Amino acid sequence: MNHAVLKRLLDEKLEFYNRPSFIESDPISIPHHFTSRADIEISGFLAATIAWGQRTTIVRNGFRLMQLMDNRPGEFVMHAGKSDLRPLEKFVHRTFNGDDLLFFIESLRNLCQQPGGMERAFAEGLELNPSDMGGAIGHFRSTFLQTPHLPRSEKHLANPAKGSSAKRINMFLRWMVRHDAAGVDFGLWKSISPAQLCCPLDVHVGNVARRLGLLNRIQNDWKAVEELTAVLRNFDPEDPVKYDFALFGMGVAEKPAIL
View (cartoon, rainbow, N blue to C red):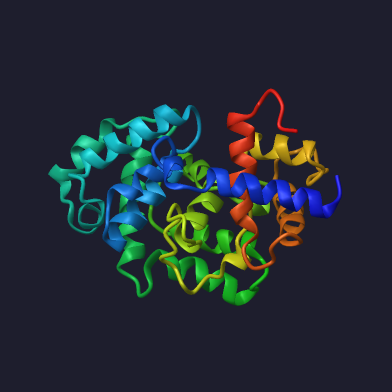
């Protein structure tokens, strides 16, 4: 399939899947429940953190977590006391448990108390190398892990330096950085360009990308993320990750035959 035909297919699928109806069944529905920047950032990061497994379970547990935070996640992270935090001890999503959640709350509090908050923690890494999103994620990870924690909690923060595809963090970054007329992604963060983003790579995206000839690498690791994102930049260098909608949508909704 030549470049022009591939671009036409990707653009058609992008237009079909990147629309408000996408929100309801996706983890992005959780931050869309809120309007303030702090609530969107905190709920979005926590929703992305637990975004593996069945989407219905992810969304259900994401909203349950927001209820445990009094549906005011920004204020909760900044001001919750010991009695407020106690109900969170019983939260479980797959291998993410109450100990992990309490650490995440404390680390988010520390980050949000710093100038620029979470956005700044990612942007600092890109200032060192504007084309190295893997390095920026690593910088954020190191900053996040400065809060005392159990060793088990580190597995819930992807590390591209060790080969992780960092799908959930890249998805969160897409939510925070991208913005277009469809209104699915939020576009809250202005210090990071959509051109710097990397494609969230999961089994659905990887399978479709390989079938379309966009990705050759077999493993869904960081090298595959870089390879796929580089190819997508040929279709739109300013906003390559918008095609995540097309690839993911085809992978989930068009499994029998995408061509």
